Length: 264
Image (cartoon, rainbow, N blue to C red; front, top):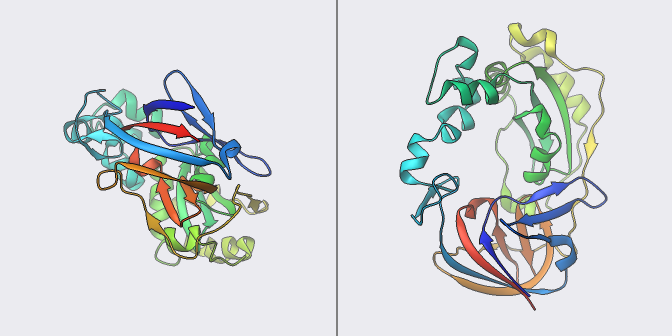
């Protein structure tokens, strides 16, 4: 069976285990159903997620010009503390930025390879944690806009990491920690203007990924260097497909790549 389409990050449904879906324009694949099956991935062409043109992908699924012009790729995406919509100040498109920035945001702690702090829109919980491969997470602050979440993250990352080691995450080289204790320990570092939004009465969320076999070493599949690959799927974690030969494929990092996927 052959599917074709442009890659976007896998959609997920939280469950035991999490369900993963690769969605194309006119079809979708339930990735969980492919465990222990051989899959072939063939790179066909580029297709920018913004303009739809066949141009080399620069970053985040966008061609170079769209990356520097589209409001969906503004600097505030990666650095929420740069958000300015709450000041009625435009970066690239104020209407777009108001919709994205002026809504409830969560500052959270997640444990995927280590404890890290992060920011996401409230409606992206627990999707954001799943995408990062976190096996446990907890909300610590809920604020009304992205800017307040951003300055909180900046303040907290002086005391806790804001990075994930994707290799450790994929090898399941992790340890359980008490995120409630971490939350309480970091409370004192929350900025004064955010203190009233601190959450002090919730519990950890635990997540179960559909993985039959974790790799001992990881080798990342690069479609530009290896445009055709086949392997037996052994798991999905974060936005990675994990294969029996210890190859891993980051779907999200390959957004904008138009591929053929064959199921043997």
